[in-house]
Image (cartoon, rainbow, N blue to C red; front, side, top):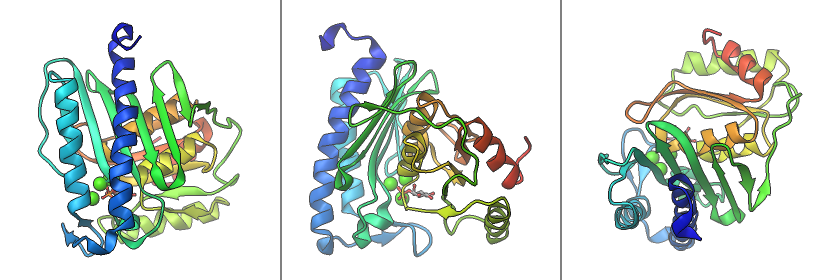
Length: 263
Ligand code: IPD
Ligand code: CA
Ligand code: CA
Ligand code: CA
């Protein structure tokens, strides 16, 4: 039963329930998005609305009720520290831009950190009817089906997710795209880093590179990729954003090289 499950799996089960419920709330905002009045956070493509804020506040309340000793880090509210060694790493809507313009490719992303390390995560894409879940040592699943990454792919095997926003350096973004195309690769982008990482785990992308992500964009996705057999380097942590590379062993190394990172 639930009560007997270990601390990590209790949290994963709760994260799945919360991601489903948050997904239902987000879906009704999405279907009524004409009534939202988004505002800009930094540049013209960095938006936030009542949907993002109210779902994060609701998630935080639910997490505090069920796990009062856990910390919470999320995009729209200040981080709170915990005492249990577990932190929840939440993005109420990853892909605010696709959400606001009516594309279905946005997600609710809920990651779990154990002593500061990625340990479990759920990425729910309500409009795609897909729920990805993983916990360290327990594998990654899409709607209950186990995921295993293709170990033989290279960047030339299929498309590569690239997440650069307007905060990226145009020179570095351009140089990466040029290097990728020279290597036989092709670019893919949707506005949810969490979904692109889930797609890597599900063999829908050969890999993913983003020059700057926050922990809430990628925490759940990192566990998905690793548990599907892939390799991820994230140079950020629970406090600081950083670049991320994900793929099978080969693709991860290729992306590091193509982006100019030290190998
Ligand atoms: C964004 C998405 C996007 C990534 C950005 C993020 P948001 O999150 O994950 O794919 O490239 O860096 O900020 O703001 O839509 O939650
Ligand atoms: Ca945002
Ligand atoms: Ca995000
Ligand atoms: Ca967000």
